[in-house]
Length: 420
Image (cartoon, rainbow, N blue to C red; front, side, top):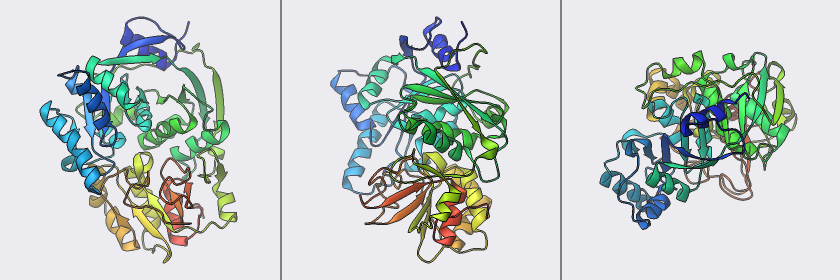
């Protein structure tokens, strides 16, 4: 009986063949916490009486939501993680000294690798499936259990095969592909399933595209997203000192899928998710016709804060000015991305156009800081959620889009089509 890539990853970890629907106790290669969720995990860890981590090198803490600290509460919260990291001599602890949004930073550091089982106390941990790993979000007490035991319980998820065909247009990206999938199946259409991305489009998709797609699998209700290891994955990993030896898996031709989706990517326009659900997708052509005025354009987050996003934004902004009624905020995913963008002159272009560039942070995405929306304000944003009040006031509205759309909209003052 053929297996999916997800079934093979779990089979390798538990030492026997397993299939979708089975409950397994699996070892975990990397456990990830951040400044919001880790203090809860630390309390559960210490309340249990545990004195040491089962796998210290397989535990990463990334302070990425509220640092530099935005207030006293966030400073005290970060200190809990700092003290724990120092006490346990964690080598994978990242704060202001090596900043980055966790789901951009850890792949950059080589800490998540193909074939891994990865968990994090953050719903967008599914991002790392772009490397051919099983990666999913769990609760903080689930994280504590993994810190203590080195493993956790899983129900092996069924897989949805997403067949992508055709070469994407210039301004159609991985973000548009995943928004189209969510539009098709809804925010619970892949509940506790894996979205497995495959087809003739895959070789055209950069790692940045793949990270965006897997990142928002959770917005379709999925347990994980995954793309099989290929030459593009190998090129991405080539210059990294990997934490473990990659374990390469491919789905069998006769693997069982619970559903198949087919998308002709060569015919796909950039997609805009209207408020107040990521599934409320419309073509950018419709958005242009609707003449949607924006107060803020945001480019960043674990979905779209990578170098490719800054490159396309700078390409569009070069020699132009942000509309007088619009605030453009750009947040690189990591310090390395910021440095590379600076060397390429991208930061100068963005600032010259009237944009502001912040430190790496999740702050704006969850309405925490660095870009909160006021009453009745409208944002075009490259983030992943547009629920009521997600980026600030409950009367504000967030339209989700790719970075090219956000950049051209910042110039024009209303949602626009970069192809124009």
